Length: 620
Image (cartoon, rainbow, N blue to C red; front, side, top):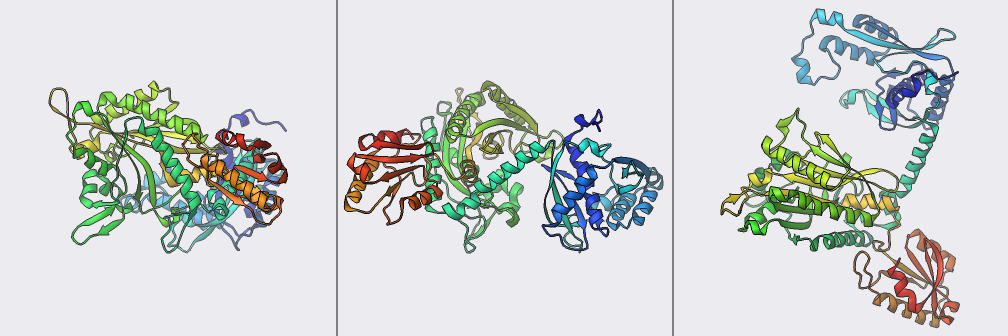
């Protein structure tokens, strides 16, 4: 049977939505008592909520999936009928679907199923309007027999015939608990079944393979053996403690970031972890993020744990008498800020309550914005080229023109800032898209998206233009005419949150870091523990201690360990490879006799003379 002319042009969402209904029909065949909730499209597929006579078990999913595949082989068509709301209620009541009847009654009395409580109280549907309401009923009909296989409420869009899903790749993914209409107060617990749905079977396989690889690379999984951080119940959720391995990576990233900035006019500063609440009232953060701020009660003053560094940096600028000759003024601080994230949102390194930012604030004139943004773009490009992450695109995040009340500052200031960032994006040949509604509350921004080794996209670096904080804190400098002039503030972060960035790059590298980032760069393995072997190891370690690396950071000595246990060489190699150490140096009797070592890397094994070992490591 050939595909209909429209099947190739159907949107993927339409196919996913239709597949949700086929899933519901299959569940109905397996559990005739099932009550149906809703089944929306989501990223990578769809789900459907049910009240079932028993709790699902993993073995149920293959059975339901097989029923779906059987249905796709049948001559099933989606037939649609519009009926009055009264007729719809009568029909759904006959089908014994009280949840659907509840939705219809809400629609009948309130005009919608999704109003807020306040909106519902102020809404009154007229009899005449109620009579005009039409409800779409769809039926999954077997064209060979005329049998109605499934019937439900839904306005679509749907496919016309299951043959249009002939080439779709799908699989039931998992199930979880849910609540009817998200209301945990009601005793209506449901079971949610998720399905993966892709255009082709090949795309489904690619997604599943990539996801399995992602699980192996997950920093939370790798942390169990590599020990990057610890989450202690006594310290608190979302407050990671950095183990030695994690601290080495963190410090190297911070050192490299400062190396990229120090020759470009930036000055390092430091600010305390708390400040009086008046600081954040003035900046606007108290009103905007009040529920997310940690409060500290002093003996006489109320304080906040700082949620951002910018208000502090405003005070540093304000305590100087700058002229136009001093502009731009550039501050750099690796500083930890604190936000009271919801417990359910906390996850490993990627969502925490203590957030260390490679924060920078530039105070400049409007005419200097483009040049300053260009310098920041150069730093971003250098950093991510070294890390090995590909830039995908840049979001020029601007205001939502339909909801201007949420933004601080004048319309004129916003226009100037948005235009300046767009001109800078064009000047630097950025692959940017203008995205409305994604601006920060104080100004527009450039958000840089990068792809990791698995092709996943992450928003990492950011450049934000701010005309509001200088106004709020009355910042000024003296211009050429001897008059006071208001500076512009540019917020920028290259890696963003150190914690989140580390979670991303651990996943990106799968724990197998490049030589400069690896916690242990070299491990020396001995074939035996004879005195002459241990003496030779000392010669090797002295070379490592004397070797100075320059790529991308300068190292006065290499980070190494020696494994001289009385274990087999095979066992030592296996353990070192599990630790993902970039370079293994093997020392045995033949190496000693020939004044060389055996070196193993990801590229293979080679013999290197002692005299050439230092130069070899500089090129790793």
